[in-house]
Image (cartoon, rainbow, N blue to C red; front, side):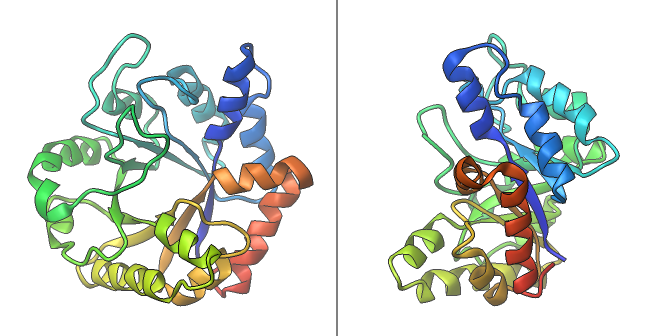
Amino acid sequence: MTVLSVNINKIAVLRNSRGGDMPSVVDAARCAIDAGCGGITVHPRPDLRHIRPDDVLALAEVVRGRVEYNLEGNPFAPPRDGYPGFLELVAAVRPQQATLVPDSDGQITSDHGFDPARDADALAPLVAKLKAMGVRVSLFVDAGTVDLSPAARIGADRVEIYTGPFADAYAHGDAAAALSACVATARAAHAVGLGVNAGHDLNQANLTAFLRAVPGVSEVSIGHALIGEALYAGLGPTVRAYLRAIAAAGAG
């Protein structure tokens, strides 16, 4: 069964553009949960451009005992004013999952993954600390990555396939090669005992096709498209529409 984890970063972007606490990330999370999602995802960045550390703490209380909590972030980003560090935030709320992403302040959004063959040794002590907290660890990787044994060796539990190139290819009407790359990574992950997540630019138009082709996807994390579509249809109905798209693929 594929879990839909709703990324609510964009709610925080809108709130921060005006100041104050409206719209509320807490209320958005409650709405998505009430509509049936299986998880809430946030990506607290050191530059505090959207989700802030206080949001991470407040959301932990909302999701506890109801759905999974997934924190995304760069474990190598150092603490700074207002941001205690990614591992410190994970330690404070003990989410079900920590997704490690090699993003930097200069990136508008996450646009590439770790290379396990190159990065495993540097990631190993951080993965060990997260596992000691009882947190499932997922590594963000590029579609087409097939040497995933280093990720398994250092104790990662899952990989999250970066689906941006697939979504772009799908929108242009020729997704076969990009989809094949996603399939190859999923199969390589399963072969070494890793679970598979997916995320970035998945939407109602491409989600069913993606899940029909890519085997054994445990979770999809969707935010930008879902929140954008919710501006017109409402957050609850949009979450339910994504759940129907998952079910249509036989993955729900």
